[in-house]
Length: 156
Image (cartoon, rainbow, N blue to C red; front, side):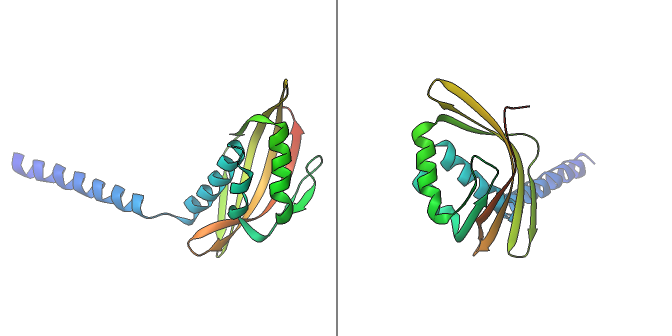
């Protein structure tokens, strides 16, 4: 009887280990979208303007309330370089859950976040809610548009 219990426990452990292995090897579209967002977030936090361009589609655009405004892919690197010249200690902190939706070759990511940074001796924090749209390119997602839906100074 003990032998059967031992084999049963071993069998369950092997099934669980196999399931975890398969789960780790299969990357979902939602995970790919979150990886693309994380690459963008990391490039901004690390102040690497040149790393942002490769994460964008050729027709990338953004739209935001002032002071950010609207722009296109050609404006991105210059605008971020200007920001990085003025700001240090940049952080992008989550404010709630991220919501990913994938439909065919298009994905959207809704994020609520706090963008904080230092500008000289001043500390600034802005609430920024945004909808990011990604296009599928091969087996990855590339950022096509950012629409900032809320932009307010402060964290409350």
